[in-house]
Amino acid sequence: MDFSLTDEQNELAKTLHAVLERHADSAAVRQGAESELGYDKDLWRILAQEVGVASLAIPEEYGGAGCSWIETGLALEVLGYHLAPNPLLASGVLATAALLEAGDAEANERLLPAIAEGNSIATLAWATTQGQWETTGSDITATQHDRWVLNGTASLVLDGQYADIVLAVASTPAGIGLFEVIDAQSIARVQTPAMDSTLSFATLNFSNVAARPLLLDAGEALEKIRDIALVARACLQSGTARRGLDMTVEYSTQRVQFGRQIGSFQALKHRMADMLVQVETARTAAWAAAWSAGTDAPDLAERAASAAAWCSDALEHIASECVQLHGGIAITWEHDAQLLFKRAHATAQLFGQARSHRRRLGALLGISAA
Image 1: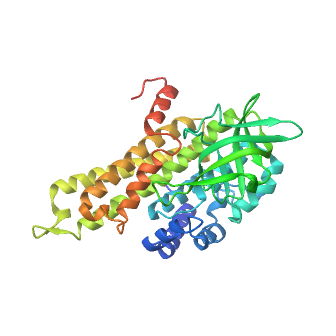
Image 2: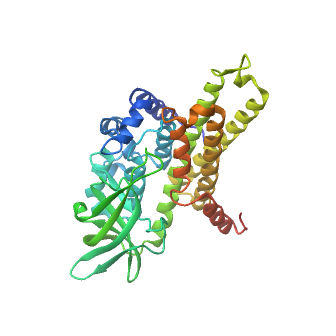
C-alpha cells in the first residue's frame, strides 16, 4: 500500500498553502473568526470556486471534481496547518457525506452543485443535547401526518448559525432517519460559544419544521458518515500538529537563554524529537484512514477509530509541548500558540473523545481497549 501523494495531490497541497499564506496569516485568521459569519467570506470564495475544496468528494455528475475523501482530507490537513476558519468540515464533509450516503438522486442533483461551488453552506444537525453523535437515536423526532415534521433540539451543529441547507438526523417510529429541512429559515438557531474561536457551532431548535426524508433506515449510513467525519477531523488535527511543531522549532532557534539558542539544549531537542514522532505517526494514521474512506475499503471503521484516537492524543500532546517550550508568551492572546492549544482541546471532543474511539476499535478488533 502506497500512501505517497500523486503529482495532482501535491499540486493541490502546494496551491492551498500558497493561497492561505497570502490570505490567512495570524491577523486574517482572527479577523475571520471574529466576523459575523465566523470565517472570511472572500477566502472561502477563493477556496471553493478557484481551488475547488468543497467539490473534491462530490461526483462530477453533481457538479463536483470527482476526486475522493483522500483529496478532501489533504485539503483539511492544509487548512488545519493554517488554523483558517472555514465551513469545509460542515458543508464539504458532513453534509456532503450525508447526501451521498443517503443516495437520493433528486436531492443530490438539487443540492450538491451549490455545495460544490461554495454558493450554499450546508450542515448536518446530529448531536444530541448531551453532545453525542449517536447512530441509533436522536433528540430530534420525525413524525408523519400529511407531511413529515421535525421536533426537538440538536446541539453543536457546525456552522449551523448561517447554513442555508440543513440536513437532520431524526428518530422515527421505525428507527433513525436522515431528513432535509424544506425551509431552513424556519429553524430557531442559537449560536454556541466555542473554546476554539475558529470553529462555529449553534444549537438548532425544531418546532414542527417541515422536512422531506432522504433515507428512513439510516443506521448503517450514519455509521459510515461518522467514520468519514472522524477521518476529516484526524486530517485537520494532523495539519494543526505539524503547525505546532514548526512553530516550536522556529521559536527554539530565536529564543536565547544563557547565551545560547534554547534549541541547542539537549533536553529540548529530545522533546521536539518526540513531537516529530507524534506528528509523523498522526499524519500516517490520518492518511491511512483517508485512503480507506476514499477507496471505500472494508477496514474504514477500524482505520477511522484508530486515527480518531491517535490524532486527538497526538495534537493534545503537541499543543501542550508547544505552550511549554514557548514559555509565558504562549499564553498571551497575541500569540498563535493559544489558538493551537484551543484547537487541540476543542477537536478532541468533536465527534467523540479518544477513549470512546479506543473502546470502539477494541470492539471492532475483538480485543479490550483502555
